[in-house]
Image (cartoon, rainbow, N blue to C red; front, side, top):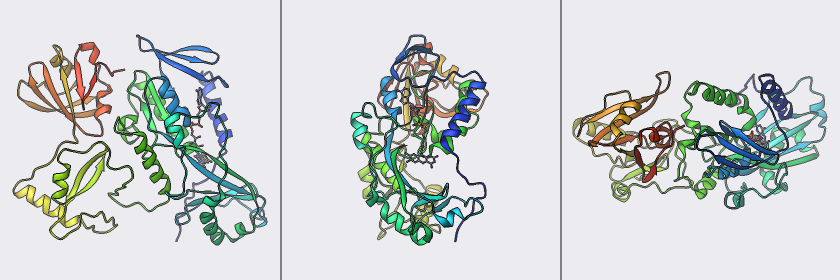
Length: 446
Ligand SMILES: Cc1cc2nc3c(=O)[nH]c(=O)nc-3n(C[C@H](O)[C@H](O)[C@H](O)COP(=O)(O)OP(=O)(O)OC[C@H]3O[C@@H](n4cnc5c(N)ncnc54)[C@H](O)[C@@H]3O)c2cc1C
């Protein structure tokens, strides 16, 4: 069985880049080639001094779109990014008579079991495997020691042994490939985030924007450029893409976690995915509730959300807390049904540890909450559900706010949006202080 995508195709990356550059110049962009950013310094007024090998540039905002160097650029600004380059290989054959004889280009072929894509490249074939989790290689050293000085468009040594299992399947599928001679093998760094989605949007630092971590880079280029430009110009994104928000990761996303997750994601590139899928690499992170062991001893089967291990369902006596994915009814169906019934008809205790908790305090705390949120500020001892709105009135965040003292508020929000919600808070304007997950913020606003 196969699926045919009529609009599938390929584009020459060099020509595409030149076309986008031509369009940018038409609208006034200046493009400087061959100079490197060496330092980044944030001024009091929120602007950045971008020092380059050809002199300084004073920038209202900076977009870090430096591919596998993006982690290095972030370090220049005093932050870090959850990125790691994986080795990615493809090979090109010399002329294949059967391919040369074709009257039109064949579609790109993706084979899931062989884990490769295959397409025409001039009169030959190009095949790009996604190697398995166990065999693939990563630039692990770069994670700890940085990209080696001077590493530019260089490539790594090809490794045919790792490609072989994929090529054997390709030969069975496309017999003319078996007789072709290999013209070249390319092995280069391809930048991965832990979940393979890119980092697109504002970082925590003022006027620092990100467009990095494109594991499938070129296909995202135009859309992401337009999305980011619209956000920068209008002060809000044209539509929500929180799954790509750079602040979905935080200090819990260690280098070890990034390495393990990027390895798993790359190796499972062509794996069948299931509804409510769980993946286990890099777990547990540091985000483990104090009730974790008690919950496990009560039969909790854990799932991960924003780094937190949290119970997905509880086993019945005699049942194993085992993750068994399925396209049909799963092994947790009846357990969840029973739990819902019990909570609805009697009671349940839920561990809310993973929710993000933020304490806002200071003489101006009430004025600050009134400015930031749409609902009324609660009186002492009371709680409200309230929202932070975008400039045009869209919901940016939903918060549960409790006034614990006259000048102190406990704010509860989702575990995955803590930094996202904090990003828009102009704390300094109100002289308030904010403590979130043990980290202290004076001002994270833009
Ligand atoms: C072997 C291989 C095959 C691939 N095949 C495909 C494919 O078939 N389809 C696909 O869509 N993608 C593919 N990719 C992925 C794709 O190439 C990348 O995802 C894409 O290039 C990433 O784009 P980017 O703009 O984020 O980064 P890059 O293209 O790496 O651009 C980053 C830019 O930042 C610049 N820069 C870095 N440091 C500095 C500094 N200090 N100062 C100034 N500038 C700096 C660099 O010079 C570079 O121009 C492949 C990658 C590899 C390695």
